Amino acid sequence: MVKKKAKLIFKHNSFDVIEEGDFVNCAITGKEIMLEDLNYWNVDLQEAYFSPIEVNKRIKNLKK
Image (cartoon, rainbow, N blue to C red; front, side):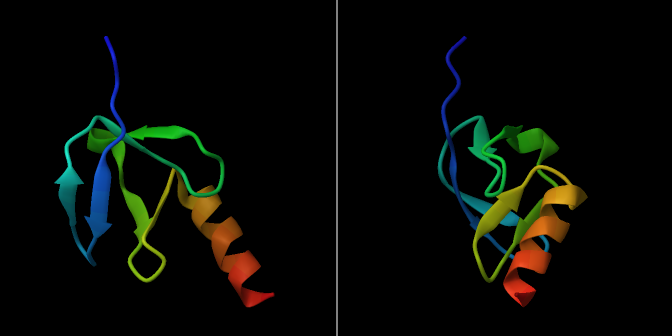
């Protein structure tokens, strides 16, 4: 099975699919996140995150 990377626009409580696909990459780790498992993103930065751990890393880096 070939997986395809999706292109999304992140909104505050949802996201719009711009280009159909199966996954997006975490902005911090590069890990693939299947769309059905995608729970964490940043609307302002338009980035997806694998888990709350990566969200916290991004927040800490932005505060520096």
